[in-house]
Length: 324
Ligand SMILES: *Cc1c(COP(=O)(O)O)cnc(C)c1O
Image 1: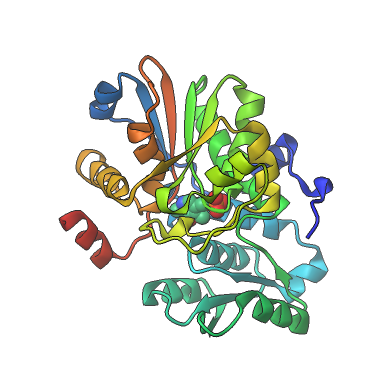
Image 2: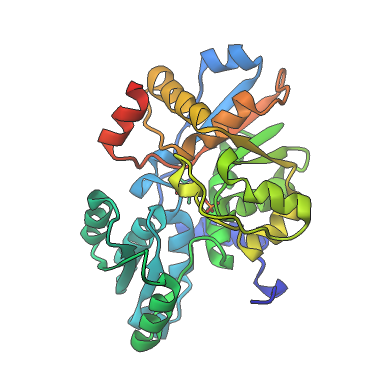
């Protein structure tokens, strides 16, 4: 696929997305922690997208993209493939907009995720992820049924929608010096950068990814998208093997840096959220706090935003991780 600059979203696209989303999403709260402020010598503000509908920010991008369908596209519906939060977001967005949705999920996906996606009214088809190619299947299905594929991050309207989370945060808490954003395929970080660059140009925005899957860090160094083998990390929302082309174009231009966290640091951050702040955060969602605590930056005296991206985790797994 060649890079098409016309598909890059702009700040105005994020503003337009925020109007579309106004009455659909929760305007999630900002939490604070005296303990963390004391530890870092900073003022820290947590944007709680783990409390968003479907349990993650992804409804923002999915709803924005689907609401821009033509009547013809809407009649045939949307197709998405994802193991995680994007599936549930597309399913709910399609239900709200009253269009058919087909979600392709691996047959060994968590039963709770399959059930949640079906509960939003989507048709779920499963495939064998060891023997079948999901992109080939989805393209065939999309053609047969005339459906539009909405990818989880490499799409202009998805990126613009994701940017509305940072936009809300900067409205709730102006003048941040730092903003930490979790990173998988880079859609959320790219959207956040569009907003921060416009609203608080001096704010330093950092991406946070797992140490075992630092493809974004490698890509920034190399100046091109580096693809890595599927990383082994607790952060299942960040097991992407490469950044999307559109996110990469925005990230390389505007990001201050990419920091990484180990699995132990993710568990420590999840435990902090549970014990100190009484909130459930999934491993991927804890990346931003983990790098703020361990990334080696001196944050003293500054105002720090931390985007918590999601809270979807199987309770048995959560108990196992925190019980260790
Ligand atoms: C999807 C997701 C991410 C990463 O978002 P990208 O746009 O792919 O970078 C981070 N955290 C959670 C909880 C997610 O669901």
